[in-house]
Image (cartoon, rainbow, N blue to C red; front, side, top):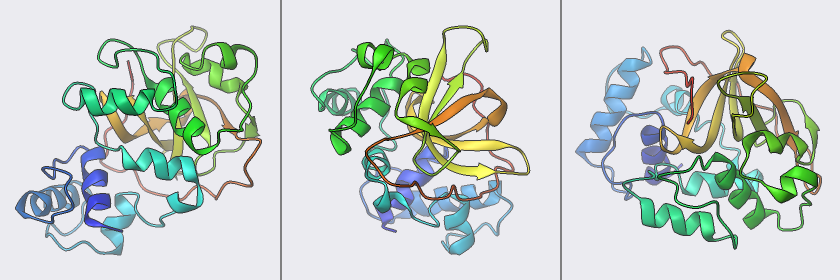
Amino acid sequence: MTTRDLQRALAAAGFDPGPIDGIHGPKTDAAVVAFKAAQGLRARPYVGPLTLEALGLAPDLSHDVPWMNEAAKHIGLHEHRDHGVLSRFLRSDGKALGDPRKLPWCGDFVDTCLRLTLPEEPRKDKLAQNPYLARNWMLFGKDSPPRFGAVAVFWRGSYHGISGHVGFAVAWDAARRRIKVRGGNQRNSVSDVWLDSDRMLGCRAPLTFGDLPVLPGLSSAGAAVSRNEA
């Protein structure tokens, strides 16, 4: 775990560590203290196993799942503040939906991460035609239980509607039946957020990759829960 990893995780959790520059300075310490206080941990700048677990940094499984490692590189990018950098990333797989400031780009983020790391993974039917519509990701790969790195698809607004959200599964809170998701267009940025599992339509896994790791258990106590990712 590097300082940049820590800063990205703090930013994704909604605690501003200042610039994500790998320098552990006063702003990073202040963000650690604020995060720990919100989690009911002793409010001090020390970062130990409990803090890492609460931030979703323990265990670190990203290196085993290449698209999760790719997604983690971009945590903290905001559609307005970092518009140029974010837009270049979304175009880096050869195509993009358009301006992330104006369009819902969760599907674009998932598609880019997977195309860059699993270029041979097939797409079919509506997903091949339009990977930017979140619900089309229910056609990706194969059905999967919630696992680390699985593509998690959610309804938004109405179960029977067309609107949705898509991201990658990061962790599970069994007590509260919430799933932590890494994705784009979450708080207008690339971030990790908690969603209620009763909104989940399903999870999918790639055909060209082996078994995904078991989803780590984490507590979402005191954390904000996303209700609308538009």
